[in-house]
Image (cartoon, rainbow, N blue to C red; front, side):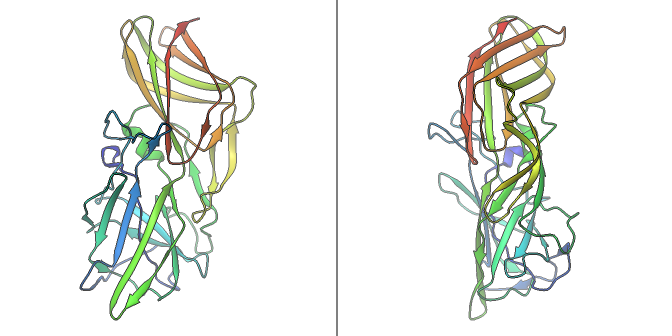
Length: 296
């Protein structure tokens, strides 16, 4: 998903009952009205303003990439039998203040009337036919602090959508929810520097930052497999002049941070830091740290 089209989706999709793992949706069937609607909501800052991954002052907003984005879909009745749903041929719809939507004029599988379909993003083709929607792997380590890089770590889940058939027309709508939170760092540097890394650390060395695990695609519940008391962004070509504000981004799993230290290291190994009070990060929300860094 291209970050400049990173809009929070509400993804709508349905699955082929009894299909084998990793089966793509081929052979579309023409119908008279849109059969599947895929949408997602934008991150909102904790103060209620919107975010926009095309950087707007209000926030962080992403849209679908219809050339490459793919959803994974499970029928709730079986809990497995994953299908992939490429977001190609989706038509961009108008959006309200919080949603971007794709509408598909074709449906390419034998959906079951009344079945609930659970979608997640991005599609994981390594899952086996017995894999369940309750244990979708995720990993958000390796971020570089840039806005465009966030799309590589964007995971989403849906509570599910019921397939409804009226005569020969299908109606399937799934709303995708963000798994993670976004942090925007706005740090004023006291002197010119080339920055190599940014680290946010819990002051009590508590493992509050989850970097890998699994999530339930129907509830968004996370089971951590890797946690740490700190998280580091490895920066590339980030330079600052004296008193310049450097803006960096980080996706984090929902957590309560406790009191933290934010530390930036430059290419000559100079260290700059600031402290901040505890924040609770909720999925689908964006948070800001605005600070003037002090050279240690």
